[in-house]
Amino acid sequence: MTLSGDGEETPGLHAEPAGFAMERAGGVALWRQIAERLKADIRAGVWAQGSRLPAESALAERFGVNRHTLRRAVAELAAEGLLAARQGRGTFVESVPISYPIASRTRFSEIIGRQARSPGGRLISSSRETASPWLVEKLRLRPGESVHRLETLRVADGVPISLSTSWFSAERFPDLVSRYAETGSVTMALAAHGLEDYTRQRTDISARLAEPEEARWLKLAPGAPVLVNDIVNVDGEGVPIQVSHSRFAAERIQLTVES
Image (cartoon, rainbow, N blue to C red):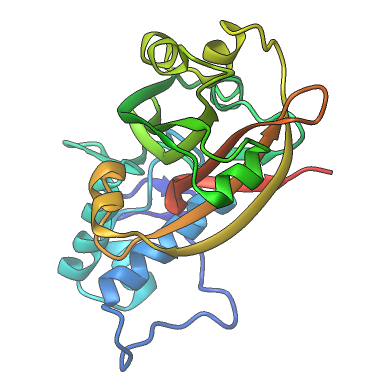
């Protein structure tokens, strides 16, 4: 426990662990290094959601920087929705990264709802197109068969979490686009076509920097990282029903692979 600048005890202030040091001669700005360190602390539970961060002076001393540099880091995390400055009270943890398990039954709405957050889905665009050879193989379609292509944005409490491109057989799910537009749920759109359940057959996970259009939709800073999920879902008979390419805002999500 450490006394803050206003004389109150402030939990969570600690010396930097061995192995961590500010890179002052590198190419990454000090304020961005501080932002990443604070973000890592929030992920690790050093400060829980709703808790107050140490005083500005204490944090500046911890990192060995001036207050201007510290404020830039805090402002960045506030813009991302992780922190909130409250006049006369201090800076508080506004949200913590969402735990997102990857298992045989992965449902966005259920995962978000279990963490006391409000899930939502938005249809950005859609099209009906002839399946390319790789989709014919992935979805086990006949050559020349059509697919629905959906571009969707998923949110939690109104904050963008993932941007996805998904493909479905247009023959098997003729009204899928309109059903998704009505409900914002792939599960409900499939259920409207008689498919009550489906499972995850495969998930390939990678990471890269967000492209400009992805950063715009996900409300990320230029060059922010995204976690990329390429998935295949199948019905009870093992027939593929969905192929998706999803980009998650890495700073807002923690993927967990369950066996």
